[in-house]
Image 1 (cartoon, each protein chain N blue to C red):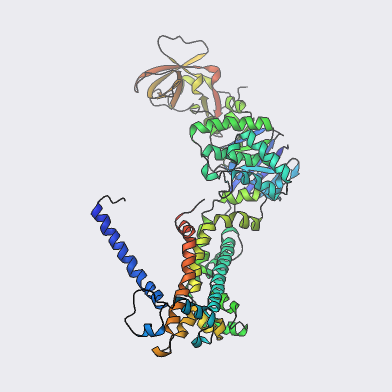
Image 2 (cartoon, chains in turn green, red):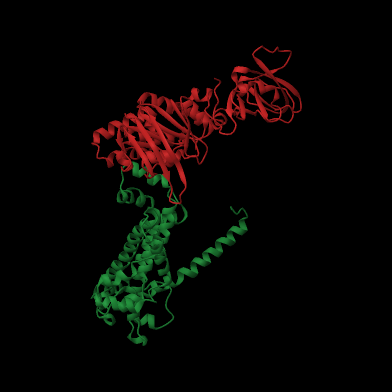
Length: 282
Length: 355
């Protein structure tokens, strides 16, 4: 699929560059806004080059605290969100690995029944079961805790199914060789299954981390204390209906800071991510 | 070092299918036993029962005098070589060899010594730090054998280990397995569907059919005295020629019938016959068959001429040295020594001995 036609190649590149510009420009504009004073932002048009308030705005947001969200600094928000996103991603991976392991490699009564139970939960996203889940969290006293933020989102039918598909491609002889080599089930899981799944795990981690990072509805319900807010919730709370009440420069800073960790995760894990999606190394 | 003894071993699957129907077999210490049979004859099931990968429905399996029916594969003191090698893809060759020993808590120096030795025997020293994915089929096969050797087990189990290799490599690896087994003197049980592999490797050859032992013995004993029609046609390539005595074209052979009234089938191997060409004479102990040539298969050093007996009778293959110029449709005479014929009961398939 190598395009030899020079004109065609230039055209293709122009099209791609245009696409990149369309996607990247709003982010760039947000960044510009985050380096201006609030007065500049409120008096359009906004300049296209960075202003001089970078250190001032970022310093205030990260360490000073923002009035509209109870004086909580963005550092705390980032920490909360990281804990939640990591907790959800790692928790989902751990649970899905174990349940897929059970379903694929063990013969126990009602195995298929449990498999279908997991499958059926695909039809019950958080929004559908949000009231009973909230009630359970209240009863367990998990409102305004990290556990309350993470636990209800940890079970994942999608990830379980994905690992199940992958485990089923593992040749049965490999399991038998491990049995002859004296590896019990958990040893097989740890020494062979997990290393073999590592690219899948990495790809899934990226997807789930972003899923966790961008959660909105559940964190909104389960946190009352401003100090437990996630960055997405805080961002929403910072914006008021009246323009004058909204510290737009800080909103822009927060928005930029909210983007950075997921972008970092994607960029740093890109190689693994792609390998996990395309290759099935056996 | 241990003998493997099977007594009345049976396997019945959950669906009621009986894959192995009572097999009794003793493999003496240090012997190389080959199980051979067509697909579905239960040979792999039998091997897997010895390995402990398949539960035993009836009978007992003893390894080194110890009943192992209820033991986990790891505690049976066996090592297995799989058809697709089953190497751990994420581990280096060295880690593959070490894994079983580590699980067994073998001391570090001992592991190093055994890996070193296996690598030397199999000449895989330079691959020790590679992954299986970076090795060729033959090299992977060696690593798989290495994994078995380092265990220093009481018995090796081979499950069609050469099936994934190309024809040339298969011959080399076959010789290598044989040499290795002679050197280590470890009792071995080897499953294959390839009768040539079976003939060349075995001390003790066991022909299985439909879950039962059809015949067991030394390869040449089985080749020379097949106990049944099944064994006669399964062992040897091309297969033994069979002539039902009540079929068409069999009249010149009627005098060869053994005693008894039962319907009989005669068998003769292609290499025992010769074509009467260029005025070759017939000896007194030979019988002459008229064939109409239906095909010629040239192997290289020899050719196999197939022809119908008396135009409508069964096909008979005759081995001819060198290259045969016969064309299909030609008529030839073939001489067969009387003593080379095998007699079988046509109904039960059992061999009939002349009294």
